[in-house]
Length: 231
Image (tube, rainbow, N blue to C red; front, side, top):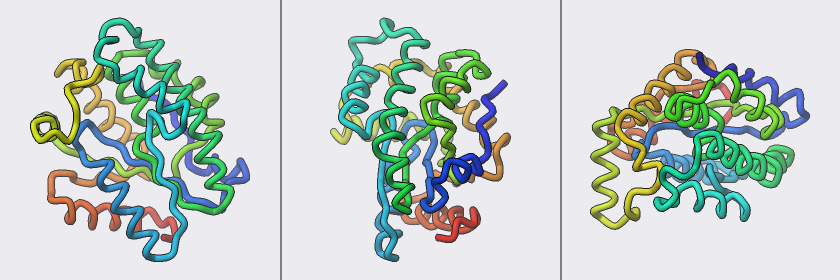
């Protein structure tokens, strides 16, 4: 059973109707960070005010917790429940100090991961009961849900290959705590994302992430247009 994320209209009821909130999701190596930056550049060229955020992190406190969450030496020492609540703490900081103020200003917020990652990684991947995660997620976000989510879909084999390539090229460091979670974990994460996309087709827009950067960027923009956000 997957979490019951509320509809994006919940944001409208919180008085944050002026801005627009778009999240990017996917497994490791899907290209989220690259596509977030490309979309931000394109929107800014069109005259939009854009704020880019990431999870976990995005704030002074969040970035410090991010280091804990990714620390390889803590592999096997953080319980799944502790990991979950650390992520909720990061998200609370990000929503309160970055995302909500930006939406109140009328900005477009692009976030590299949000609550869907928690259901996929901690719910499915760590096998925590997803129905019990919802209340903590809602509490940490104040019920905030993206207006649209771009899910960059790639096969797990490609995910692994891209991660190895980035490591060999020195683009990223050695495997972190999440990277060491094992193939079975990432297969559950992948399944979690797919079930979320099936459950929320109005909000989650699936984009094939296997193409080159330019092709995927075009498809992302097409998905944004299809979401009818007025951008």
